[in-house]
Image (cartoon, rainbow, N blue to C red; front, side, top):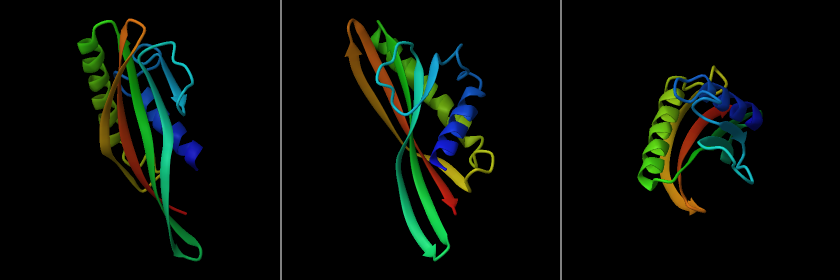
Amino acid sequence: MYKEIIDKIIAILKAYTGLIEPTDIRKYFVGEPLKIYDYPTIYVELEQDALDKETTDKTRHLMDFGIVVVNRNADPEKADKDALDLAEKVRAALEANATLDALVLDSDIVGVRFIAGNVENFALSGVRSVLRCLKYD
């Protein structure tokens, strides 16, 4: 179930204007990559699944997926602005398809956090969005 949801999130993002691979986003990853060579990139990972056993044969899943945009640029302000612009497109793409093509009952971005750093002579900017999905099995 988790891999299927991650794959669907990535497919939705790849099809959205401004997030197309490889023209807008160089590479998408399942899980955090050990090394990133091309920027901007996006990776998607499961953060948690809060399980609630409602009956003996029905479980409610409240799953959080981290969707991280990572960007690099020699100009720190440009790195930040571009990462923020991409994160807004991620949010718009996922809000337009809250059921992830009927894979979940509902989903919503419930948090966004900015991350900054540097690599060699480049500013590294990231935005982590948390997508909360509701599903029963």
